Length: 383
Image (tube, rainbow, N blue to C red; front, side):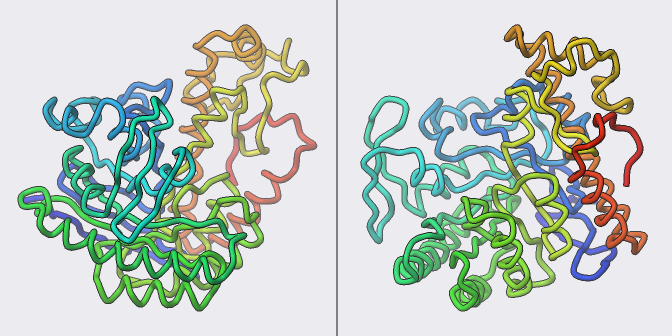
């Protein structure tokens, strides 16, 4: 049987939450799904087989970083991002728009695209919808993101409306560029990105424009940029429902485990975030009892594991404390592995709870335990 280009099926629902699968040529993605971030062609401190062993079905690569180093054309020459990095399952690439806005010096926006200087060496570059899609095609992405313009939620409504409207024009150009991609378009997918900050009417206008263009999936963009969880959830109370219910919904850049649980309850299917890997490198471990700062002196003589079921359970908190305090790279590697495993355990718990129609109680138990910092965070039994 020939693998489908892209097929999303919903297997069960519980309230607004859904669980299902995305079938693609390089593998099946179980939803709700968390995508570890491999910004520069690697999930930091992890080998591909280790990432897969945590339960990840798909990872994320970054257009902006890879176009600057080593260059999209070079990656294509070397066989594409999958062969180059050693990851043989699906890869989603973001469009580069967020990084252009947040990392680049002397950014100049126009209807054509964005001109900017590299944060690495100051070299001049231009990124348009067409070039963003071309780069993602050269990388060999399985899921391509439309190029969009992100503005902070603190800007005026006029600025937000202008950015949303431009993003929708760029979405149409992104779709046209994708459709002109020949063989790659026949085996990849493209997602549109809803914008509109925290304004319900702007979000609806964005959704209407995206649905008219038509995409394989839809992302809720422009959140998790400092507005706080309450404001984000208030937006998610309506934004996902404005999108096609038969297509996957992807909340970009989110987030903390309790952010993910709340977003799944509101109908989101896909997530990505640097938090589990970045936190691991900085000495923070995520557990069912909340985050643990392994640098804390309380762990210096604690022989218990972070979690008895963790893939790093053979190493004690005392040893992890020593590694992090000593600046040993093994500490970052082990905590990153644990954090990615924990995130995938949360996703597995969510999928099971939705399937068994017990999401409300599972989420309530999770939040109660995760928010309680009074216990020594021994890990172990799940909600």
